Image 1 (cartoon, rainbow, N blue to C red):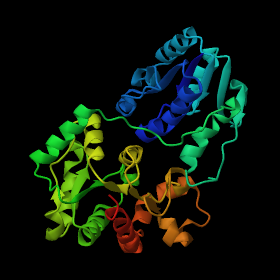
Image 2: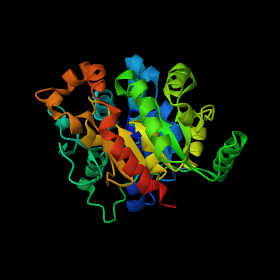
Image 3: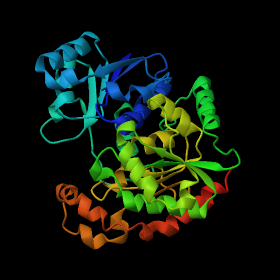
Image 4: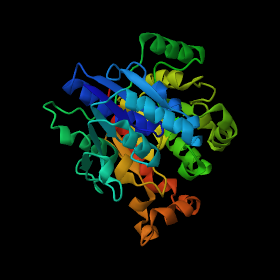
Length: 356
């Protein structure tokens, strides 16, 4: 059997959708399982034996109709028996239309159900604490009636070499071994997904005040000025616990460093999803325009906790569409005071500092 899974999106989506490949591998151990993703996301798939081939969706495929058609015909030549489209947007519809796959599964959406042999309901509400991001992906497996125990947890694979390199980085920066280490997801993928920097500094102060921990900042070199702004806004006693210059040089080295941390706190995004895949406890601060019910995965109130402005000021969300919330995100962020959830951070720290 030859299978293609499609997920053209960002790191968190690609990592979460890899559970489709993982469960297919358990069900069909001898199948060829290929995964179509953006080239920038491939580091989170390294070491995953559930995936035989990674097919890259590159910028040229987005910009050129000719290149997109070339990719579609490349896929057609593979003669896939099964295609699962977890992306389900115009770009993937074209690939699906021309794929000639025998069976094609995606979400039920108006106007394009004819493309697929199986159209799965796009559920609006989660049924469990897995969160909609996980539940929706797993729903794409339901038409196959797999006779296996479904594993809903995304996996990241860190080599011994990568672990040792991360340990060496910690030693180089004289990170204290007698303390646990918290990673701060400092900045979101865009401003509309980034908790205000002055508020984030207060959150980090809460962490430092309530826990004797090492604090690492997760940011890209191009975000250095924003990172400095947060650092400078922190109290001197907090700054003493921050290892500001301890950074990974690329995504794989970040994964190695995250694997040496004990938990993660901060903005929702790829860093949080990677930490969860490494089985690290997480505390997420959601953007006002992002739906918590989708990405609050594995929420149990202990190891995985999240907060959203709607939890504290539901009045600000009455009769507001997602488009309206996105437009007002920056002003809504200003209403999302860190004092609202200070007690939750303290509780999260107590729960996760006490575990080995």
